[in-house]
Image 1 (cartoon, rainbow, N blue to C red):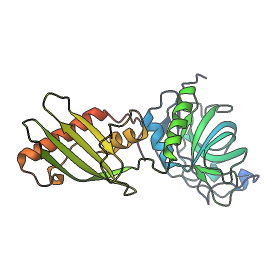
Image 2 (image 1 turned 180 degrees about the vertical axis):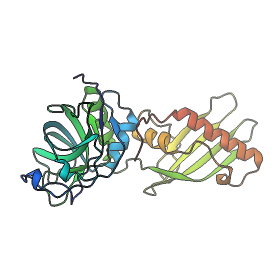
Image 3 (image 1 turned 90 degrees about the horizontal axis):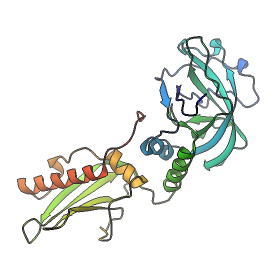
Image 4 (image 1 turned 45 degrees about the horizontal axis):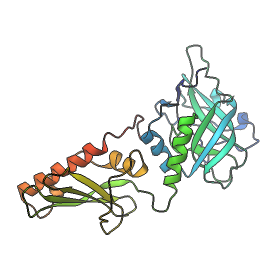
Length: 294
């Protein structure tokens, strides 16, 4: 099977009360209800930065694992699972822990609903390598649940580098938080024609201050910078692309600056602030997310 084949998968249903205990026969389990989630394609070698970052920043546990065994869950224990899906208990060998450690040893297991082909069969996943993003199931050693229905990415040298670099940034104390919106903005006209500065203050999920400053001067290219402290640092610059701060801004900022956020200004100042904000959005470029964020 080609390495870049994209496996459509549905949710990991490994919730605390639904996951079989380690060593327990799956046929002894009570029926597991379906969450009726839509099928989601798992990118392999072509995962974008934002796709990976969406998964990494939300997961307290990130595992590099190789699929060891798949056990089909009988239909009598998969109440509500559509006929085109096969509920499967997946066991995987842990190759490396990139994030988190408590309760994880050499092997993990979780449940997946996997689409069947036209002959009613599911793909052969044995020996294939994936990054699993999720968390432990309490009181069930070795059992995990994925953070999202599609919180697994097939291993490749490219995804390995991407997952590890984003994880290193995400675990830092001062890691850029999610953007929750805009607090306020204002534009100051300079002393000469064509000179001016716009400052935009952002709301974040952790209340960590983030602000944007856009400077215009006659005869010079407009430039902008982002500051992650309460005091706007004059040495600040635009974020590295790709990078976690770029991802937070490119994927979290609204497309336009509503005039209601611009303080202490008439129509000319509001228009200048909105133009400067558009300059930032254009400079950041498109958020390269290809998956539906959940």
